[in-house]
Image (cartoon, rainbow, N blue to C red):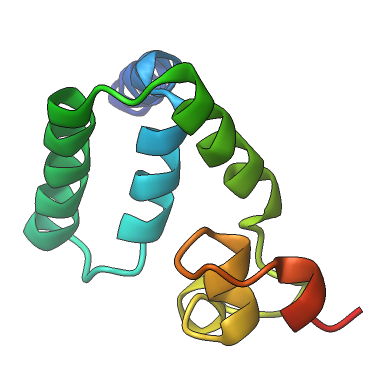
Amino acid sequence: MRSALVALAAALALSACTGPCEELGNRLCRCVASGTTRDSCERQVSNEISRVNPSKAVEDVCSQKLDTCNTPAGADFCEWIQTECGKASCGLSIEDPSTVCPK
């Protein structure tokens, strides 16, 4: 039980240190097979964020996409992200989510 609490505290501490672009990238990494591959995806996201050093304007766009990159009730995130609506909502296409997502 104690190790689970330590792991949760560490995860919360790390998530507090990530910006919206890294958080969005990590959300997308959820659809990668678990284990080493997902860890590798998250490391790649972190490395790319460090390399690019996104501006405040870019971080604001990522923050907006985080707000819309939410799976509809009852849907599987990894399946939804493959749809036109999922891609638009999470910033993986240039479409406006309001024009491609069902109301």
